[in-house]
Length: 197
Image 1 (tube, rainbow, N blue to C red):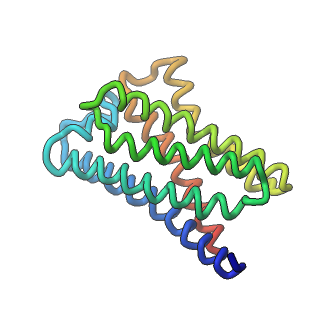
Image 2 (cartoon, rainbow, N blue to C red; image 1 turned 60 degrees about the horizontal axis):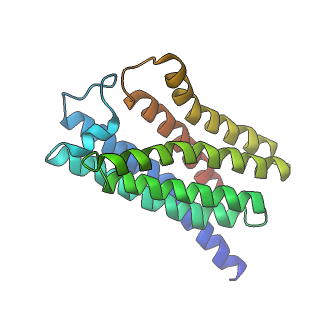
Image 3 (cartoon, rainbow, N blue to C red; image 1 turned 60 degrees about the vertical axis):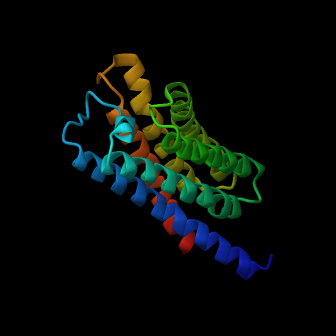
């Protein structure tokens, strides 16, 4: 592919990286607004996915749509941006696997309890692992600022879960899910914006 074709592909991937978390959080927060019984401390975010009507539809659509856009970001943004680094390629592939897990969370809601649990764990484990691997790629490429930013996002994504297992600071998982997802989303948006430049 020509250099201009690569640039176009990367910019398209970057744009989806920016849009994906915006769609995800818009749908999640709107679903929360439509379901006043939702509790940030006593529920999981996925509890919204089995509520009948607009709540469940919005929540599941948001996960599936942002997962598809995130997959595009992984393949046409991340992979294009760090294609010369084999470690970077591994990180991008792990990130793509995480986005597939995100789609699966929306498809296999809590009504599919075993599958839903498995894909949820996969998403929240694979995402920080991908960021830590990508951190190594940035560090080896002498991109220290990007390495520090990426590892910080990875730590912020993993820490709410580590603290939950260590101290059980909330009875359910909506808060760690939200914080972890927000950390990754900030990284997505900032990296996507940087790729457009």
